[in-house]
Image (tube, rainbow, N blue to C red; front, side, top):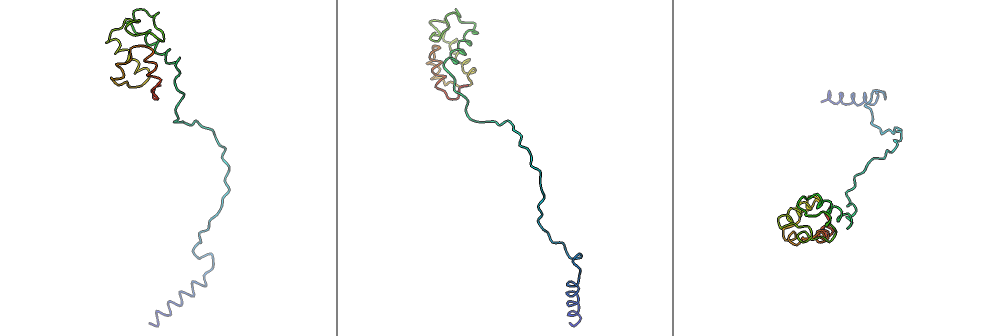
Length: 135
């Protein structure tokens, strides 16, 4: 017991008597100067909606689509009010093909009940303009 007490006091005295260089290092926060990094502009991708389609743009795209359709009897009859059957000579199956081509052109899906009502360029333009997802 006496031996343990002497060893404890000796080790405590040795700790106090140690020079500062031999003590455990104390962690200190240091501030290092940093160089300012110049800001470089970079492209930013916005997920906001683009501008809406104009009526003239939609009429032009549909007219171009119909002009490329080989079953149209007279391409001169293609205008903003042209009826698919009466003015362009398209039958019901051709009208379905035109509606499918319009879906692809504007990246939309037209339900069957709405597709049944599209029989003219004017009706197609109205439907496209009413769709917010049309591109």
